[in-house]
Picture 1: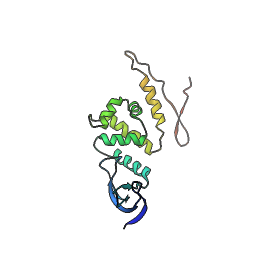
Picture 2: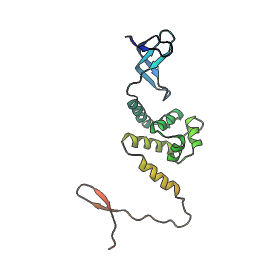
Picture 3: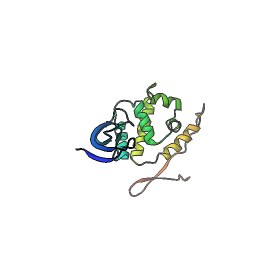
Picture 4: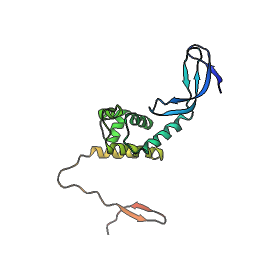
Length: 175
């Protein structure tokens, strides 16, 4: 079924709309099936309509976390964009360098297993609605602390108290 839709921005002719399969540029290797494509019969200009794009990107991010092989460049670049981080911010978040992130994204270097798992955990946090800011704060705190040689300072013990339905942290009082 074809319908008329608006005018071509290039030449002004009426556009013809058809449902087509179209590659999704944000994640190479992904094909959008049956999306409206508005084409100009005069100059050939085409405009793809992507309905519910936020939901599409969320579903793709969720699918990438379920992969059983390591993420590749285009997938890493897509996920970084979905998380809305610059390469420098993304590198800091993963404890890496911007150069390494660039190598991953351009398939010049494979992502390490640890970085891959960490990236998937960040995606799962966002999908679950868990604020990544708490993770960033922890990363900043840990990133600033240099491991000491010799005797390590121990963290104070966690004090936990049962309540009616759950456990909660409490202050440990001297006896």
